Image (cartoon, rainbow, N blue to C red):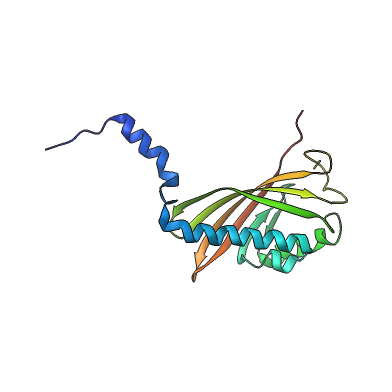
Length: 163
């Protein structure tokens, strides 16, 4: 007997696919990813570039809020050490995980909102989202390697102030 599935049911399944892996089987992974983000925020708040970049893979890449590309963990760490010593020295960040999606069992896309205060300056072309507050949206692509989540790529975008 052949069964015909209504088009609306197929559409509903398509909308559920991106979150289909976010079931109970990924509860531990989601907890680990949230912990990784929290540890990274703590490292930022200490101005510790080595700890901030510890979960990037050696060949990872990172695009910062002005669109500059940094390739490899060493370059990402150098750039963050420079900003921790200058415009972002003493700054504090609060990071909120907005969404985690598992397109495959060992791959995660982690979207976060960063709220940065206490900075003494901003890169050219960047302005505070609100007085004293720079809000950014970060998207990480992460892979579970040898049982540990690692960052393959990060892309940070500043949130423009309301017109």
